Amino acid sequence: MTQKMKKYILIFICAAVSFAALPKTQEIMRVCVLKDAQDLKLTVDSGYKIYSIKTGEIIKRGKSLYKVKISAIAEGILLGNTLLPEDAVKLISDKDGRIYIDKKRFRGEVVIFKTPELKLVVVNNIGIEDYLYGVLYHEISHRWPNEVIKAQAIAARTYALYQKRLMQGKPYDLTADIYSQVYG
Image 1 (cartoon, rainbow, N blue to C red):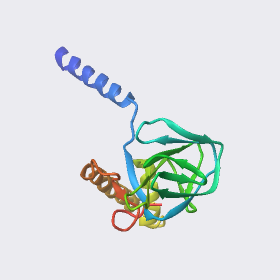
Image 2: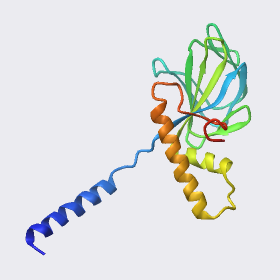
Image 3: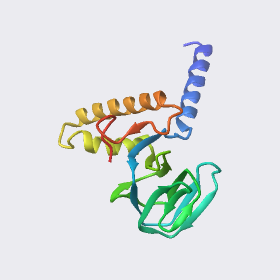
């Protein structure tokens, strides 16, 4: 092996190691988990912050919420008796906190927005790997062979990323039902 070839191999190895050491950012999937709801019940079992989608500012924070009714009105979003004068808000729980929408548990962030018809739409913003856990649990049996589960994970990931690309500029990438991939 020539000295020049050794040099190129060393450069290649250094580049590969550097690339492998880069932090892995996870694709965020926007999954519509509830559409056209008149109202919903929200529970957060830890501290939380509610942000304005428009400004990014915190508009409400607290230690927890328990079965608080949320509804859309002309002036904004009604959280219990508190008016949030916004068309859309983002809810983030503290680390390891759980968010429940109508008794269904969600990880990640939850975006709630009102439609012109004064209905609510709820979108779960979640990393793709966590999204896949929620899909695989509902799409296939855990008793199936590992290779089948791996193949389904690849297919589900590919479909999700394709939908994300297709739905750019829309309020969500996927739905949580049979029209996308069943997610929960």
